[in-house]
Length: 410
Image 1 (spheres, rainbow, N blue to C red):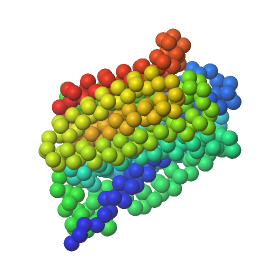
Image 2: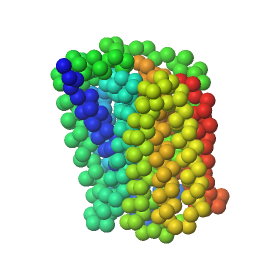
Image 3: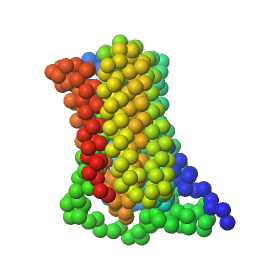
């Protein structure tokens, strides 16, 4: 009997959620300068509004994961998608306080995305395929960002940024209805899974418990590897968020590009991140099958790729041509994107039945970094040497992350 392929539909559904979430999350950044001018905001106010997403997003990671563990991924993720869609529509109100509150509520709603995704992948894929699945999941996060950049620019120029937010809210609601109807928390519960596929999945995947297991908080709090994973995620998320916050503005102000051109060029690093996620997962899983050594296939690969990322970003600093500089930065982001599946596979192996909770803890720390960087950028511009200082800080972030990965033993 040949295995059915229901697991790939599961993965496609999770990838769809990731793309939609990042699509609405990053829909503000390409239009930031237009919204700022329309509402008469300062750069500091605009930065605070964009960063309002990340503080509740970080703080609600663990509660969202715990709720998902009780409700199951099926109902929890569908509910979260409806909530973040409503928050997206709220941004159309066009008042600073209301938009900041909507961004914060969106952060609350999207906090469960990554923990639920990791939880579902750990149960629907065996260890030798988890990095590939995680690579697709993380890659589609950037797919959402890629679509958001040019589509946002088009909406701004043709329909206005307020209507953009209303229309962006619709796909998430439609996805939530489908997911709640079709998905099942365990492969054994899904009518489309035959015995051969179930056997292949369960050969070393995490079996979903029938009762909610107690979370070993003391062991987690005293784990050096978990602290290292949390800290590297702080720096990696801070680096990635540059593209979802200030990169389009950097291209406009430091490189003299128009809104439309900056929006299109912003997609290049994000496309590279997608390619890195997909190919990085395949490479890491191949190394895992070849060597049987997680430290080589996951941690070693992550450290190497982050160092290459930093070298390329620093190299772009010396390039005068803006398009070539973006291409070099994009090559760096390919390397950074290849780390994402290594990270997720490490969390699944380390967390076991608590993979969702472990993912929530590390993602929480990552988003403290993501929340900090949009605020730090205006300070660097004003007090530390302008956009050149921002680029130096951007590259340094990845060197620190690589050094942390060198010490991870998970």
